[in-house]
Amino acid sequence: MTAQVDAALGALVRHGFVFRHAPGDRYVPWTLFGQRPRGAYGDYLHVSGPDDCLAARMRTSSQPAPSDVVWCEEGAFLDTVSALLSLPAPDVANAPRLATRRTAALWTPGMPLG
Image: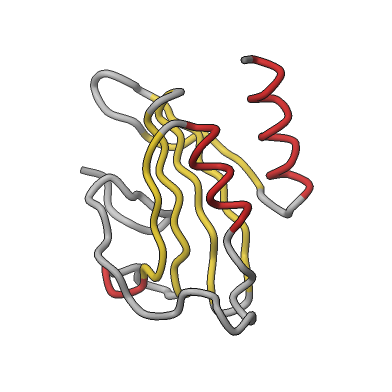
């Protein structure tokens, strides 16, 4: 399993993701947060554990809001990464562009904690 996780992280980095630590909660003090700018959109991955990941594509905004989320996926790390890497580029005709519901678990830089 470790080799699969390493391969998935390597694929994300090769596809332009940059990672940093992000705030967690009382159970998981630190999480892993990855982001990739995509012009007017950004792709994000928030990893709290092997079975607790959230990926999203959001419109770029100085003040992130629920209406900025156009795609979201939650689940196990490898499944979530696979879905994220399968997402079409924002400028492709079938890429998601309409706002969807933002899950409460999504934290992005600039958003208040808690």
